[in-house]
Length: 160
Image (cartoon, rainbow, N blue to C red):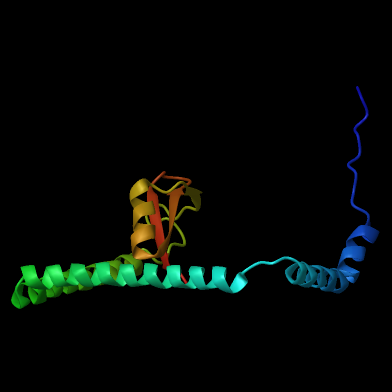
């Protein structure tokens, strides 16, 4: 068998050289850029003006599109329809929030198996549990009892 080759390591002097002279390297780059800008005849003001103008016109077009969408919705639907839709969406949001809180409360603590008092091992989450984790912004852990093979789920709130 061939002997293992040792990996070539970066010497400490190269790393410390860059770290020690990083300020001077930055000064040299800034100085070279300044000399380049003095020698070269670039119209920076013109290009900067065109970029800022294009960006502002783009933002203005987006605002016009959103305003046009609002105008269409307001012109098409009556005020009572819009208020009714907002109330229905609010009710669905409140039910979803309550459902999330109760599910977390029900599945928040797992120490031992309730059936046989056995220990748990972690297993892969199901696709439904991944969706719950994503939409409800919770941590979902899936466990299986080592003795009776019963599966359980533990949910905790994610900290942002």
